[in-house]
Image (cartoon, rainbow, N blue to C red; front, side, top):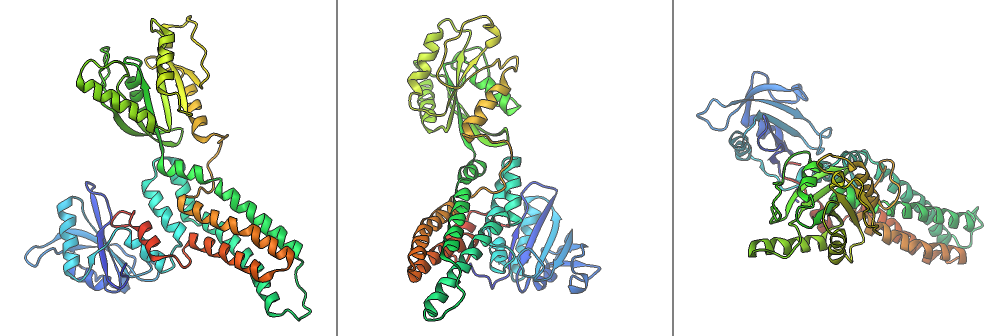
Length: 452
């Protein structure tokens, strides 16, 4: 990205009461002065003050009332001069204000370009920049808090400490190569090996947070499946807290998959309601049932609803086994338990919940099983750090080089030890953006929305 131009973009969503146009760069103030007029001048003497005036979108119009604030470099989000114009909301008003800014010398910002400039200007490292994107896309309190901690530098601090410890070891390895004949007070090799082993353990601990990171950032794909009239759509509506799916007593009401995002036990999920699986009565229902089977294959967790009030319970169970034989994360749900209070239900080898959607009972038990299936281990508190896929790949590269460093230090081969240490230090540096490849940076920042 070109960091010399002055850039501008709308940095608020459409449809709100206020739209904010952000202008950043060396000529941000001059561009804003051509667009905005007020009783007080927009300049350094009024920096960081919200001033009332008008945005002139053309020479013939009086302009819309708008607030303006000037934030001089380096104390701004991007580290450059920034002016923000707070205009009336609405797509037309904000677009006209943005067009006026571009006529005054700014160009349209690319996705993530404001945050990219913040990274380039040292306002944040790469993990913090990534966390800005995570913050915008967070779908649960846990994901939000995780992004906030990463913006504050929780991961950066950990990576920085590991790098500094390795740099200290590398410095002595290189000194031993340079001063082989000198009788200096060298650190014992055993202490370095112990330190490398401790660093290895810390990196492995970070790697274990990768699954949490994937779940909190990407969510879990959960499919509600079962025979017609088992209560899938009713359960979907109950979990969502509103009526999303049509519910009737007629079998086959749901004829296609319905998808909705939700937050279950602080876990972002995509809930997919599917057509009841049976022999199709017509072509359209058949297509819906085929989509149901495909959704089950793609699901990370399947919630299979069984009708506890059905005439043939073994038939309910055999149908479930037929369509979920290879699904490890299956939760069986006996629904309509209120209609079969004294009935002996077949024992299942899967995690099983007994619920009544109509009476809203047993839902906590179901969610307990769901939470256990997601995390696969006790998860009683929020993670302090949870790495993403890019971090995991680089941490894996880093940790793989450390055993060689320890072995070479033990044998006194300082030159080879230094090679392994440099590989680890380089991999850790790439996590926080040291010597980051331009293609990697483009890939990361292209995921951002325009205006951030």
